[in-house]
Image 1 (tube, helix red, strand yellow):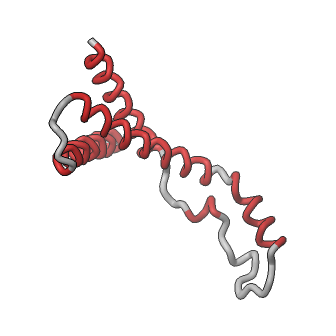
Image 2 (cartoon, one colour; image 1 turned 180 degrees about the vertical axis):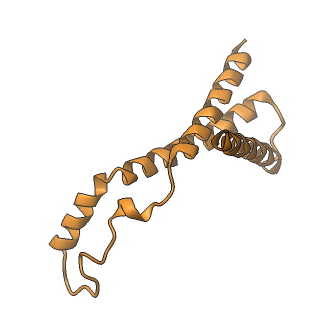
Length: 116
């Protein structure tokens, strides 16, 4: 139940942010401007969520370690002391992905309504 509450709060925050963006850009408040702005915010959330997911899976760990060994000049830190990228990101990408997907779903529903 706590996760659902967090997703709902983040979704409401994104919707308020979309409306603030519409008003700050001095666009007219129409369904088309809402669709355009929600596409941008939803796309950014999904992109960042997927990026965090890929980094957290450890795909870039081997690449990072290889590059450190290949371009080892005079480093003050040893290879063992440097953390891999998958350990640096401590948060889960699920909230970003769920919020972005729901924002894009709402945008798709509005786009279907706009097309009629």
